[in-house]
Image 1 (cartoon, helix red, strand yellow):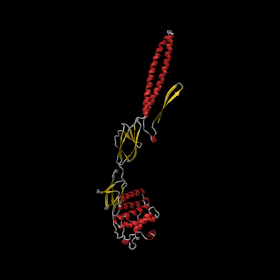
Image 2 (tube, helix red, strand yellow):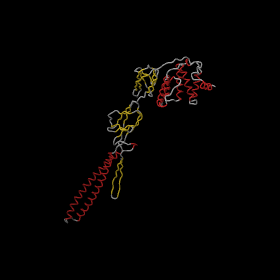
Image 3 (cartoon, one colour):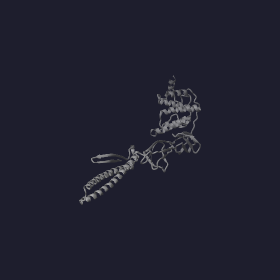
Image 4 (tube, one colour):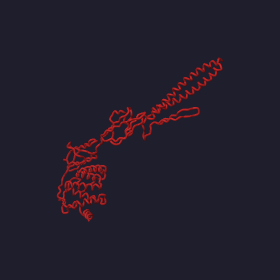
Length: 413
Protein backbone atom coordinates (compact mmCIF):
# COMPACT_ATOMS: atom_id res chain seq x y z
CA UNK A 1 0.00 0.00 0.00
CA UNK A 2 2.82 2.42 0.82
CA UNK A 3 4.51 1.85 -2.54
CA UNK A 4 1.19 2.43 -4.35
CA UNK A 5 0.72 5.69 -2.46
CA UNK A 6 4.24 6.86 -3.38
CA UNK A 7 3.65 5.95 -7.02
CA UNK A 8 0.46 8.01 -6.95
CA UNK A 9 2.40 10.96 -5.55
CA UNK A 10 4.93 10.63 -8.35
CA UNK A 11 2.29 10.31 -11.04
CA UNK A 12 -0.29 12.92 -10.04
CA UNK A 13 1.32 15.49 -7.75
CA UNK A 14 4.14 17.93 -8.52
CA UNK A 15 6.88 17.34 -5.91
CA UNK A 16 6.33 20.59 -4.04
CA UNK A 17 2.53 20.38 -4.16
CA UNK A 18 2.60 16.81 -2.86
CA UNK A 19 3.37 18.15 0.59
CA UNK A 20 1.14 21.25 0.56
CA UNK A 21 -1.38 21.04 -2.23
CA UNK A 22 -3.53 23.72 -0.62
CA UNK A 23 -0.83 26.42 -0.82
CA UNK A 24 -0.34 28.64 -3.85
CA UNK A 25 2.99 29.17 -5.59
CA UNK A 26 3.22 32.62 -4.03
CA UNK A 27 3.22 31.03 -0.61
CA UNK A 28 6.27 28.86 -1.47
CA UNK A 29 9.15 31.12 -2.59
CA UNK A 30 12.33 29.20 -3.51
CA UNK A 31 15.98 29.82 -2.68
CA UNK A 32 17.76 31.73 -5.48
CA UNK A 33 20.91 29.59 -5.38
CA UNK A 34 21.33 27.32 -8.45
CA UNK A 35 21.80 24.25 -6.27
CA UNK A 36 18.39 24.92 -4.68
CA UNK A 37 16.44 25.23 -7.92
CA UNK A 38 13.58 22.80 -8.44
CA UNK A 39 15.09 21.72 -11.75
CA UNK A 40 18.84 21.39 -12.16
CA UNK A 41 19.69 22.41 -15.71
CA UNK A 42 22.71 20.53 -17.11
CA UNK A 43 25.22 22.33 -19.28
CA UNK A 44 24.98 21.95 -23.06
CA UNK A 45 26.38 18.60 -24.13
CA UNK A 46 29.42 20.20 -25.78
CA UNK A 47 30.43 21.80 -22.47
CA UNK A 48 30.03 18.74 -20.26
CA UNK A 49 33.13 17.46 -18.51
CA UNK A 50 33.12 14.08 -16.78
CA UNK A 51 36.56 14.61 -15.20
CA UNK A 52 35.49 17.90 -13.65
CA UNK A 53 32.33 16.23 -12.33
CA UNK A 54 34.41 13.50 -10.69
CA UNK A 55 36.50 16.15 -8.93
CA UNK A 56 33.34 17.87 -7.69
CA UNK A 57 31.96 14.54 -6.44
CA UNK A 58 35.18 13.92 -4.52
CA UNK A 59 34.88 17.34 -2.92
CA UNK A 60 31.24 16.62 -2.04
CA UNK A 61 32.27 13.35 -0.42
CA UNK A 62 34.80 15.18 1.76
CA UNK A 63 32.25 17.82 2.77
CA UNK A 64 29.59 15.17 3.48
CA UNK A 65 32.04 13.20 5.63
CA UNK A 66 32.75 16.35 7.65
CA UNK A 67 28.97 17.00 7.99
CA UNK A 68 29.17 20.18 5.92
CA UNK A 69 25.96 19.25 4.13
CA UNK A 70 25.21 22.58 2.45
CA UNK A 71 28.64 22.57 0.87
CA UNK A 72 28.12 18.97 -0.23
CA UNK A 73 24.85 20.06 -1.86
CA UNK A 74 26.61 22.82 -3.77
CA UNK A 75 29.27 20.41 -5.04
CA UNK A 76 26.77 17.70 -6.02
CA UNK A 77 24.50 20.15 -7.84
CA UNK A 78 27.43 21.58 -9.76
CA UNK A 79 28.61 18.04 -10.59
CA UNK A 80 25.14 17.24 -11.96
CA UNK A 81 25.17 20.39 -14.08
CA UNK A 82 28.68 19.58 -15.35
CA UNK A 83 27.93 15.94 -16.19
CA UNK A 84 24.36 14.76 -15.42
CA UNK A 85 24.30 11.37 -13.74
CA UNK A 86 20.99 10.17 -12.30
CA UNK A 87 22.79 8.77 -9.24
CA UNK A 88 23.67 12.32 -8.24
CA UNK A 89 19.95 13.02 -7.73
CA UNK A 90 19.88 10.33 -5.05
CA UNK A 91 23.01 11.80 -3.46
CA UNK A 92 21.43 15.26 -3.50
CA UNK A 93 18.27 13.92 -1.89
CA UNK A 94 20.35 12.33 0.86
CA UNK A 95 22.41 15.50 1.37
CA UNK A 96 19.28 17.65 1.73
CA UNK A 97 17.79 15.07 4.10
CA UNK A 98 20.86 15.09 6.32
CA UNK A 99 20.93 18.89 6.25
CA UNK A 100 17.26 18.95 7.30
CA UNK A 101 17.96 16.52 10.13
CA UNK A 102 20.82 18.77 11.22
CA UNK A 103 19.24 22.24 11.11
CA UNK A 104 15.49 21.69 10.62
CA UNK A 105 15.40 23.95 7.54
CA UNK A 106 12.17 23.10 5.71
CA UNK A 107 13.72 24.06 2.37
CA UNK A 108 16.07 21.09 2.71
CA UNK A 109 13.12 18.78 3.34
CA UNK A 110 11.28 20.11 0.31
CA UNK A 111 14.30 19.65 -1.94
CA UNK A 112 15.07 16.23 -0.48
CA UNK A 113 11.59 15.13 -1.54
CA UNK A 114 12.10 16.77 -4.90
CA UNK A 115 15.43 15.05 -5.62
CA UNK A 116 14.23 11.63 -4.48
CA UNK A 117 11.17 11.97 -6.74
CA UNK A 118 13.36 12.99 -9.68
CA UNK A 119 15.65 10.04 -9.01
CA UNK A 120 12.76 7.54 -8.89
CA UNK A 121 11.14 9.02 -11.99
CA UNK A 122 14.38 8.74 -13.96
CA UNK A 123 15.48 5.35 -12.63
CA UNK A 124 12.66 3.46 -10.85
CA UNK A 125 14.68 0.23 -10.81
CA UNK A 126 18.03 1.73 -9.87
CA UNK A 127 20.28 0.33 -7.15
CA UNK A 128 19.10 2.71 -4.44
CA UNK A 129 15.46 2.96 -5.52
CA UNK A 130 14.26 1.03 -2.47
CA UNK A 131 16.12 3.31 -0.08
CA UNK A 132 14.84 6.38 -1.92
CA UNK A 133 11.24 5.17 -1.52
CA UNK A 134 11.75 4.57 2.19
CA UNK A 135 13.21 8.04 2.74
CA UNK A 136 10.47 9.58 0.60
CA UNK A 137 7.78 7.85 2.67
CA UNK A 138 9.23 9.27 5.86
CA UNK A 139 9.54 12.79 4.44
CA UNK A 140 6.05 12.84 2.92
CA UNK A 141 4.59 11.82 6.27
CA UNK A 142 5.39 15.35 7.51
CA UNK A 143 2.84 17.75 5.95
CA UNK A 144 3.93 21.23 7.09
CA UNK A 145 6.45 22.88 4.83
CA UNK A 146 6.23 26.23 6.66
CA UNK A 147 7.01 29.61 5.17
CA UNK A 148 10.06 30.03 3.04
CA UNK A 149 11.73 33.29 2.17
CA UNK A 150 13.75 33.98 -0.93
CA UNK A 151 17.39 34.67 -0.31
CA UNK A 152 20.01 36.09 -2.66
CA UNK A 153 23.39 34.60 -1.82
CA UNK A 154 26.75 35.17 -3.51
CA UNK A 155 29.12 32.26 -3.02
CA UNK A 156 32.44 30.78 -4.04
CA UNK A 157 32.50 27.00 -4.48
CA UNK A 158 36.05 25.64 -4.11
CA UNK A 159 36.81 22.06 -5.13
CA UNK A 160 40.13 20.24 -4.81
CA UNK A 161 41.34 16.65 -4.67
CA UNK A 162 44.34 17.44 -2.44
CA UNK A 163 44.22 15.91 1.04
CA UNK A 164 44.16 18.14 4.14
CA UNK A 165 43.78 21.22 1.95
CA UNK A 166 43.14 24.67 3.43
CA UNK A 167 41.93 27.82 1.72
CA UNK A 168 42.31 31.50 2.49
CA UNK A 169 40.03 34.13 0.96
CA UNK A 170 41.37 37.67 0.67
CA UNK A 171 44.06 36.97 3.27
CA UNK A 172 41.59 36.16 6.05
CA UNK A 173 41.47 33.13 8.34
CA UNK A 174 42.07 29.66 6.90
CA UNK A 175 39.13 27.39 6.14
CA UNK A 176 39.01 23.69 5.23
CA UNK A 177 38.91 22.90 1.51
CA UNK A 178 36.94 21.85 -0.44
CA UNK A 179 34.18 24.15 0.71
CA UNK A 180 31.65 26.87 -0.04
CA UNK A 181 32.16 30.47 1.12
CA UNK A 182 29.51 33.20 1.20
CA UNK A 183 31.04 36.46 -0.04
CA UNK A 184 30.18 39.98 -1.05
CA UNK A 185 29.95 40.58 -4.80
CA UNK A 186 33.13 41.91 -6.38
CA UNK A 187 36.83 41.10 -6.67
CA UNK A 188 38.33 38.35 -4.55
CA UNK A 189 41.55 36.35 -4.30
CA UNK A 190 41.74 32.81 -2.99
CA UNK A 191 44.74 30.71 -1.99
CA UNK A 192 44.48 26.94 -1.60
CA UNK A 193 47.34 25.08 0.06
CA UNK A 194 48.02 21.52 1.17
CA UNK A 195 51.02 19.61 2.53
CA UNK A 196 53.24 18.46 -0.33
CA UNK A 197 51.69 20.79 -2.91
CA UNK A 198 52.52 24.17 -4.37
CA UNK A 199 50.02 26.85 -3.37
CA UNK A 200 47.17 27.54 -5.77
CA UNK A 201 46.36 31.24 -6.22
CA UNK A 202 43.57 32.79 -8.26
CA UNK A 203 41.94 36.22 -8.52
CA UNK A 204 38.42 36.70 -9.93
CA UNK A 205 35.21 38.74 -9.96
CA UNK A 206 31.99 37.29 -8.49
CA UNK A 207 28.67 38.78 -9.69
CA UNK A 208 25.89 39.29 -7.16
CA UNK A 209 23.79 36.20 -6.57
CA UNK A 210 26.19 33.92 -8.46
CA UNK A 211 28.02 30.81 -7.31
CA UNK A 212 31.57 31.11 -8.67
CA UNK A 213 33.31 27.75 -9.06
CA UNK A 214 37.05 27.40 -8.42
CA UNK A 215 38.67 24.08 -9.32
CA UNK A 216 41.94 24.16 -7.42
CA UNK A 217 44.26 21.67 -9.11
CA UNK A 218 47.33 21.80 -6.90
CA UNK A 219 50.70 20.84 -8.37
CA UNK A 220 52.69 18.31 -6.38
CA UNK A 221 56.07 19.37 -4.99
CA UNK A 222 58.89 17.20 -6.32
CA UNK A 223 60.68 14.93 -3.90
CA UNK A 224 64.44 14.78 -3.32
CA UNK A 225 66.57 11.68 -3.95
CA UNK A 226 69.96 11.57 -2.22
CA UNK A 227 72.38 9.03 -3.69
CA UNK A 228 75.56 7.87 -1.97
CA UNK A 229 78.10 5.61 -3.67
CA UNK A 230 81.58 5.35 -5.26
CA UNK A 231 82.99 8.51 -6.78
CA UNK A 232 82.54 8.64 -10.54
CA UNK A 233 79.60 6.22 -10.58
CA UNK A 234 76.75 7.08 -12.93
CA UNK A 235 73.28 7.63 -11.48
CA UNK A 236 70.12 6.84 -13.41
CA UNK A 237 66.51 7.37 -12.39
CA UNK A 238 64.03 5.32 -14.40
CA UNK A 239 66.75 4.67 -17.03
CA UNK A 240 67.48 8.39 -17.44
CA UNK A 241 71.03 9.53 -16.69
CA UNK A 242 71.08 12.31 -14.07
CA UNK A 243 74.84 12.62 -13.42
CA UNK A 244 77.94 11.21 -11.75
CA UNK A 245 78.65 10.86 -8.05
CA UNK A 246 79.01 13.00 -6.15
CA UNK A 247 76.06 14.86 -7.66
CA UNK A 248 76.67 18.59 -7.86
CA UNK A 249 72.97 19.49 -7.82
CA UNK A 250 70.02 18.35 -5.72
CA UNK A 251 68.22 15.53 -7.51
CA UNK A 252 64.49 16.29 -7.63
CA UNK A 253 61.85 14.20 -9.34
CA UNK A 254 58.10 13.74 -9.33
CA UNK A 255 56.53 11.83 -6.43
CA UNK A 256 55.71 8.16 -6.95
CA UNK A 257 57.52 4.92 -7.68
CA UNK A 258 60.98 5.09 -9.25
CA UNK A 259 63.99 2.87 -9.94
CA UNK A 260 67.40 4.28 -9.00
CA UNK A 261 70.41 2.62 -10.66
CA UNK A 262 74.06 3.30 -9.80
CA UNK A 263 76.74 1.89 -12.13
CA UNK A 264 80.47 2.18 -12.60
CA UNK A 265 82.95 0.54 -14.91
CA UNK A 266 84.35 -2.60 -13.27
CA UNK A 267 81.45 -3.03 -10.85
CA UNK A 268 78.14 -4.81 -10.87
CA UNK A 269 75.30 -2.28 -11.20
CA UNK A 270 73.24 -1.44 -8.11
CA UNK A 271 69.50 -0.93 -8.46
CA UNK A 272 66.80 -0.06 -5.93
CA UNK A 273 63.06 0.61 -6.12
CA UNK A 274 61.93 3.63 -4.12
CA UNK A 275 58.62 5.29 -3.24
CA UNK A 276 59.09 9.05 -3.22
CA UNK A 277 56.56 11.14 -1.34
CA UNK A 278 55.45 14.66 -2.15
CA UNK A 279 58.10 17.10 -0.91
CA UNK A 280 59.84 14.10 0.68
CA UNK A 281 63.46 12.97 0.78
CA UNK A 282 64.72 9.43 0.12
CA UNK A 283 68.35 8.36 0.54
CA UNK A 284 69.86 5.57 -1.56
CA UNK A 285 73.15 4.06 -0.35
CA UNK A 286 74.67 2.19 -3.28
CA UNK A 287 77.16 -0.58 -2.48
CA UNK A 288 78.88 -1.79 -5.67
CA UNK A 289 80.73 -5.10 -5.95
CA UNK A 290 83.61 -5.73 -8.37
CA UNK A 291 82.26 -7.47 -11.46
CA UNK A 292 83.23 -10.97 -12.60
CA UNK A 293 84.32 -9.47 -15.91
CA UNK A 294 86.80 -7.25 -14.13
CA UNK A 295 88.22 -10.26 -12.26
CA UNK A 296 88.51 -12.11 -15.57
CA UNK A 297 90.26 -9.14 -17.18
CA UNK A 298 92.82 -9.04 -14.37
CA UNK A 299 93.44 -12.79 -14.76
CA UNK A 300 93.84 -12.61 -18.53
CA UNK A 301 96.06 -9.55 -18.32
CA UNK A 302 98.29 -11.39 -15.85
CA UNK A 303 98.47 -14.56 -17.95
CA UNK A 304 99.02 -12.54 -21.13
CA UNK A 305 101.83 -10.55 -19.54
CA UNK A 306 103.41 -13.79 -18.32
CA UNK A 307 103.16 -15.20 -21.85
CA UNK A 308 104.93 -12.15 -23.27
CA UNK A 309 107.63 -12.35 -20.61
CA UNK A 310 108.10 -16.05 -21.35
CA UNK A 311 108.27 -15.25 -25.05
CA UNK A 312 110.97 -12.67 -24.34
CA UNK A 313 112.98 -15.18 -22.32
CA UNK A 314 112.65 -17.75 -25.10
CA UNK A 315 113.75 -15.18 -27.66
CA UNK A 316 116.84 -14.52 -25.56
CA UNK A 317 117.61 -18.23 -25.37
CA UNK A 318 116.99 -18.52 -29.11
CA UNK A 319 119.53 -15.77 -29.77
CA UNK A 320 122.04 -17.50 -27.50
CA UNK A 321 121.63 -20.84 -29.28
CA UNK A 322 121.87 -19.09 -32.64
CA UNK A 323 125.15 -17.36 -31.67
CA UNK A 324 126.72 -20.55 -30.37
CA UNK A 325 125.59 -22.54 -33.42
CA UNK A 326 127.04 -19.85 -35.70
CA UNK A 327 130.48 -20.19 -34.06
CA UNK A 328 130.47 -23.91 -34.68
CA UNK A 329 129.17 -23.32 -38.19
CA UNK A 330 132.13 -21.09 -38.96
CA UNK A 331 134.54 -23.81 -37.81
CA UNK A 332 132.62 -26.31 -39.92
CA UNK A 333 133.14 -24.21 -43.03
CA UNK A 334 136.90 -24.16 -42.27
CA UNK A 335 136.91 -27.97 -41.84
CA UNK A 336 138.03 -27.51 -38.26
CA UNK A 337 134.97 -29.13 -36.68
CA UNK A 338 135.36 -32.45 -34.86
CA UNK A 339 132.69 -35.11 -34.78
CA UNK A 340 131.58 -34.13 -31.23
CA UNK A 341 131.48 -30.47 -32.18
CA UNK A 342 129.42 -31.27 -35.24
CA UNK A 343 126.90 -33.12 -33.08
CA UNK A 344 126.87 -30.19 -30.71
CA UNK A 345 126.20 -27.89 -33.68
CA UNK A 346 123.20 -29.96 -34.72
CA UNK A 347 121.86 -29.94 -31.14
CA UNK A 348 122.18 -26.14 -30.93
CA UNK A 349 120.36 -25.68 -34.23
CA UNK A 350 117.55 -27.96 -33.01
CA UNK A 351 117.31 -26.10 -29.68
CA UNK A 352 117.27 -22.77 -31.52
CA UNK A 353 114.37 -23.85 -33.72
CA UNK A 354 112.40 -25.24 -30.76
CA UNK A 355 112.98 -22.12 -28.68
CA UNK A 356 111.99 -19.91 -31.60
CA UNK A 357 108.70 -21.81 -32.02
CA UNK A 358 108.10 -21.60 -28.26
CA UNK A 359 108.80 -17.87 -28.25
CA UNK A 360 106.44 -17.37 -31.19
CA UNK A 361 103.63 -19.40 -29.61
CA UNK A 362 104.10 -17.78 -26.20
CA UNK A 363 104.22 -14.34 -27.76
CA UNK A 364 101.09 -14.84 -29.82
CA UNK A 365 99.17 -16.47 -26.96
CA UNK A 366 100.37 -13.87 -24.47
CA UNK A 367 99.46 -11.03 -26.82
CA UNK A 368 96.02 -12.55 -27.47
CA UNK A 369 95.35 -12.97 -23.75
CA UNK A 370 96.64 -9.48 -23.07
CA UNK A 371 94.40 -7.97 -25.75
CA UNK A 372 91.41 -9.98 -24.50
CA UNK A 373 92.03 -8.85 -20.93
CA UNK A 374 92.39 -5.25 -22.09
CA UNK A 375 89.12 -5.47 -24.05
CA UNK A 376 87.34 -6.96 -21.04
CA UNK A 377 88.76 -4.20 -18.88
CA UNK A 378 87.85 -1.46 -21.34
CA UNK A 379 84.31 -2.64 -21.94
CA UNK A 380 83.52 -3.74 -18.41
CA UNK A 381 80.66 -1.27 -18.39
CA UNK A 382 77.44 -2.25 -16.60
CA UNK A 383 75.43 0.32 -18.51
CA UNK A 384 72.45 -1.29 -20.16
CA UNK A 385 70.47 -0.16 -23.10
CA UNK A 386 66.78 -0.47 -23.78
CA UNK A 387 65.38 -3.80 -22.71
CA UNK A 388 68.32 -4.49 -20.42
CA UNK A 389 70.72 -5.54 -23.24
CA UNK A 390 74.42 -5.05 -22.63
CA UNK A 391 75.86 -2.25 -24.74
CA UNK A 392 79.05 -4.27 -25.23
CA UNK A 393 79.64 -8.00 -24.93
CA UNK A 394 82.96 -9.86 -25.16
CA UNK A 395 83.33 -13.56 -25.91
CA UNK A 396 86.56 -15.55 -25.69
CA UNK A 397 87.03 -19.10 -27.03
CA UNK A 398 90.06 -21.36 -27.58
CA UNK A 399 91.07 -22.24 -31.17
CA UNK A 400 92.80 -25.47 -32.08
CA UNK A 401 94.15 -26.41 -35.49
CA UNK A 402 96.81 -28.54 -37.18
CA UNK A 403 100.09 -27.34 -35.72
CA UNK A 404 98.51 -24.27 -34.08
CA UNK A 405 96.84 -23.25 -30.85
CA UNK A 406 95.33 -19.91 -29.89
CA UNK A 407 92.39 -17.87 -28.61
CA UNK A 408 89.61 -16.10 -30.47
CA UNK A 409 88.02 -12.99 -28.96
CA UNK A 410 84.86 -11.34 -30.30
CA UNK A 411 83.41 -7.98 -29.29
CA UNK A 412 79.70 -7.37 -29.84
CA UNK A 413 78.13 -3.92 -29.68
